[in-house]
Image (cartoon, rainbow, N blue to C red; front, side, top):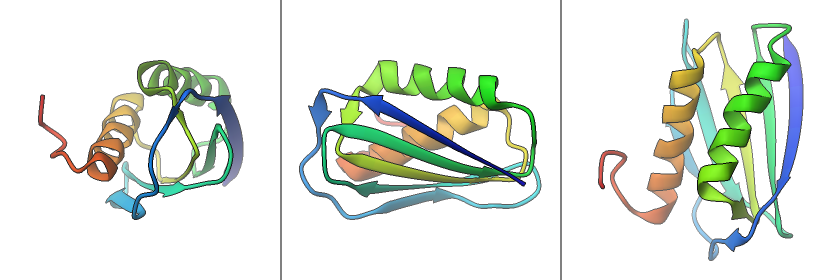
Length: 106
């Protein structure tokens, strides 16, 4: 297992929201938990079974943050070898859930 930590400054502070959990930790997948957090940052903590992919995680998370620019949130990811596309999908699903939209809504 490898544990990674990332932090980004954001401008879009969301009002308080109920935590959202999407995905299932299983072979080749992951779960994402998004919670309200104090401050103006976006903290992302990852526990992954795939060691040595920190640069790829950073690229995927930077893309996510560039698209959403969220602040005042904490994201926990439990990964069992998901591809970058699945990681991005689950992150977007979690944000859709806390905003009250369905993941496929335009």
